Amino acid sequence: MVIFQKGVATLKAIEGDTLTLDVTVEQQAPRQAVQGLGLPAEVEVYLQRMSGSGNGTVTIDLTSLVPTSAMSARTTVDMEMSMSGNTQTLSRGTTLKMTMAPGR
Image (cartoon, rainbow, N blue to C red; front, side, top):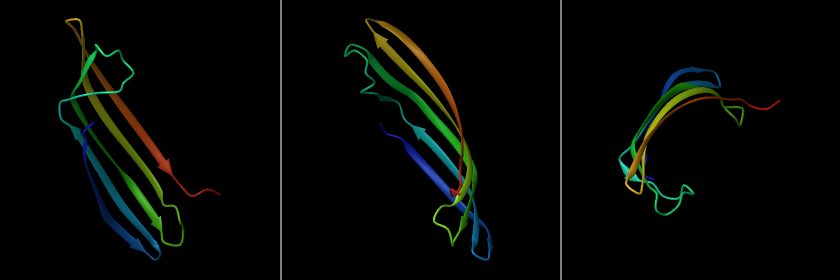
């Protein structure tokens, strides 16, 4: 599957050994045939559209191996499935919230 992704990190602050970045991400995919979904061979599946975006903050302590971050993203996927002349359109939206921090 072909997916285009653009990520931008903007340095917002430097305080001693700590960097704070704002992060944004955008994803898009063009219409394309989708393979390998475990469906019978006679089922044709096409990705009609995929788009997504997200943002968050990353804090990097230069004295630590693992940064601290909080991100959220939303992705929408529209697919079309065809078999024996019948077509079904499927739309899905997914929201992801992720945090990461060094272990204790």
